[in-house]
Image (cartoon, rainbow, N blue to C red):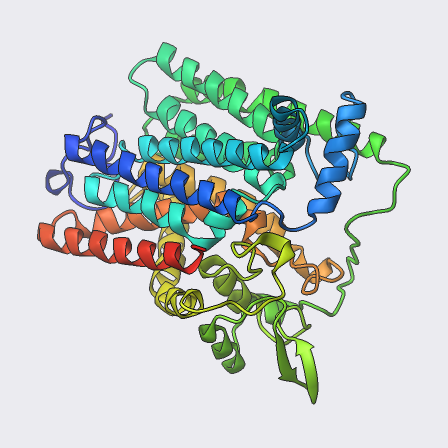
Length: 469
């Protein structure tokens, strides 16, 4: 039996993707990566690394320096990889520029992660214009620009996530069992590293299993090969993740809970505010900052973290497309100061134009889920292996963190809606968006693809300018 085509479009209309790509694409990629790294180094210079809970993370780093075998000095949700990066900054500078150097290392790690994003898309996004667009889009989102520099665990997640996805896509598309096994072991190592970076890595093997089952049901791999790849790629990270969690709970058993949960519902971020928008959400298009006062409910209050003042979709959109905490302007040292011009004007444009890509992401994810479920029964119209891998792994990261918000105390005030917590998922959503665009534009005039790439470039410039100080 022959394998079905990788998409719903006729195979004859879709040229095979090239892993090498044209020379100009390679130069374009290096230009994007250089611009991203340069912007990151500028953020280090403007103290962006002094972000959320900086004092807490600095304390945890100091504690780890004193006792290297106590990996969880803050709480069981914060993993030690970022603190090991801080230790490297300490030893390289003898403690004189610990966090500046740690932030530089984080920028370099994120730059490498973006390289793996592009390398992964070569097998399932046919247009080099859209491959570069995917990298530029996720790289220059204000949420990415800030979260990959701030000294916190969020900066440690993108590299192991992108490396995991690159290995998984390669292992499922490998031409031989031996090559597939090698990439599966690489995915296992990346997932194991990820468990030291961020807690959500512990649930990613479940999404990996979904992707392997989907590839088997679509006839792309045999059942025997699927079992082998699953065993090699997913078992060890799952065991390590459970062990690390148990160790973390044991080390922090004497401390107070960091996140308070009420499984009956807190009444703060209700399901209505989590899932639905409301007319007053239109205020986000003025790009308000987190600690800026508004006249709300008869008095001046911090409007964004005020319960029920905005819906979750509105807050999340705002924080994806703007530096909502104003960290790019001198970090926490200056985050309560109103955002100056022209950065405020560029932030408004970023939030408004971002509606187009946000709607595109939502539609792309719906399409991915529907086609994946349908393919389990009909084997027709399945998404490409690469798009399915990025999409399902991203959803596995995003959904558990978001669906618990109605049960978390201070979901608004503590900023649990901020995209820094789901940054790897946000990258995955961006990749799925351009994979879907590639499918839609494959049989249409090339100038439409070039036009879309140009619009993404304009959007990226606006994003970068909004956080450049």
